[in-house]
Length: 161
Image 1 (cartoon, rainbow, N blue to C red):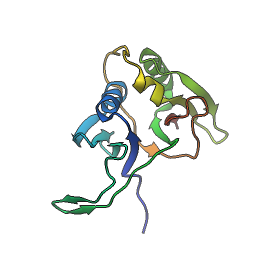
Image 2: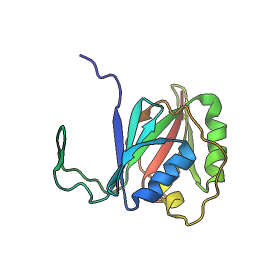
Image 3: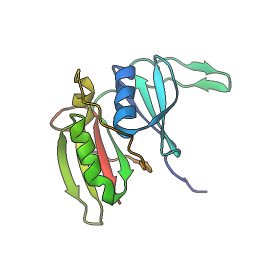
Image 4: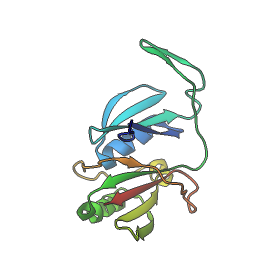
């Protein structure tokens, strides 16, 4: 038996519609389904990125196929999207165009580079510029045990192979 990947990864936010708009605009993710409590976004047609309303899933949820157990999350979080190495500069530009400050850059000893940025600041801004065209090829989600020291909120890492 083998685990074949990460199927879903999720975050908990105060404002689901604003967060969904950010991830759709900046990363080009397509919405699979959602309501006022959550949204499921497709990542490279291989994984699902879930955005939940903080406190919105504290009770069991009856569904046609069964019951979803309660869940929630608070505090500093971290997740990573993977992108091709040659696209990393374009992603940095895309983030800059959308008012997302880069917090750190890391070149890993085993290869690959990462850029770290706090997303809570970008999502909370009232007017972010619109960048043209969706960017694609976010191939997978990876999770690492780091948090944003500067902004104290969720931090995202783009990783190149």
